[in-house]
Length: 459
Length: 173
Image (cartoon, rainbow over all chains, first blue to last red; front, side, top):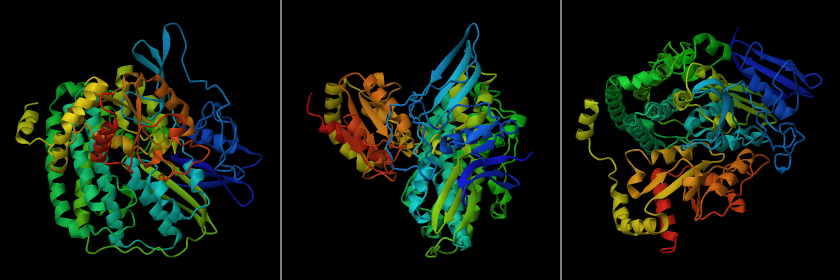
């Protein structure tokens, strides 16, 4: 059984087409009578894809037991926004109401806890619905899409160049990865090739983004277990990386920088110095944090996702690698393996594994950047004057969370379908599996150890 | 932990920020005055994200890292709108978040202030146009007192924005 990457619907010549992307094949089927057949029995994570299709296009999903809406909340009117006849700029009112029936377990002594959409920290909005027997979590339902901005619809009818700013702002933590995904598609559609320098620059920036995100995470995870000194240290390194990014690209998050001429090779010495500083610091950090038994009491064997379930759900990114699945878009790419990439795997699937995978990846990223920076010889030049050729293009990019899938269909040089699947979209669906042996107080820790994106998931 | 303390004593204080601290010192008395008169010695902020890309949240989180350490100014982020003096809003105000945002504002005790953060919160500067899923125009639904611009504003810009907001308040209101 191959991994399901994504499932979505687009307009074909006259009718709707169902696109299924698997790890080893792509299937395209014409939708007949507005009905599609559900894959959710075989692929549990197909469920959100299908519920999304139902909300977007109003199709009937056969043999899918879940009849609830996904991206449209209680007061969202019964409209199908991705249909061509629906106007992007129509105004919806709040009069409609359709109650949402949460997945919950009932019985004597079992109670429900609702958390969100507004949480206690500075985080994005999302809803978590727990069924509890005392402290023990019996079930968790994740309900998101509070940040649904209609990015897919927004990008239709525009040129690729016009959506670059939007794509950079899909998810702040993965901005560079998203931009690289779009850039790859842009080059494919113009039948141009990226020069080696260009590829190196993209890859270096992508690894810098991974560093900034992972450093913040290795601070936040121990902090959620009550060990705050780690946050002070981790957030400091993360800030260091953001400041260097600002120096290199003039943006702390790397917004709107891909395909720009950045002159990284002139700052070679500076970058190399900075890398050896981070290398010293991460080695110190690891040595220090490994030595704190009360912390590892909390991290070890908490929030276990076993390998079998992770494969069944098609998990990606850090979550998958911590459960022993070698899933990394970079590992299939000679360009990366030649520059020192190694898959960082752990096998227990618990919070500790996800924490350690991040530390390993930080070290590996430092190594990759170092190798790549030495190969930079000259400034890149990007000329994209050619028009985009009609066709269907997709790209896969490994962001700091996991694999981003991006698909663009171009007709008459403008985009007729834009689709992205954030790694979080899959991993959120597997989150409830990690809760079964834990108490509700462990939830923030488990959630943070996956550190999934809400904005990228909701689009 | 001995390793940590060794490192702690060998590294300097990170909050040094030359350009900025001079201004801070000159303002500090004024700020303390304002905060103690208007907000009983501490300014409590509740942040609500209603459709941002998470960069503004990251920058607000960065405010508590050792470089900025916002708490030293008597400003802190709190867990509930009911504890807050200021509602800090980021994002485009999506259709799905709109009701919850207004709800959070209504839960705040008086006197209450609203600050919007990031270019997304203003339709003119936002990359995202108003559409069926984006209600936008926060100021139409709740009174906005101050705006901090930037995409995203850097932590320094956020601190500056907060200070300017404090300066804008009438004395001893």
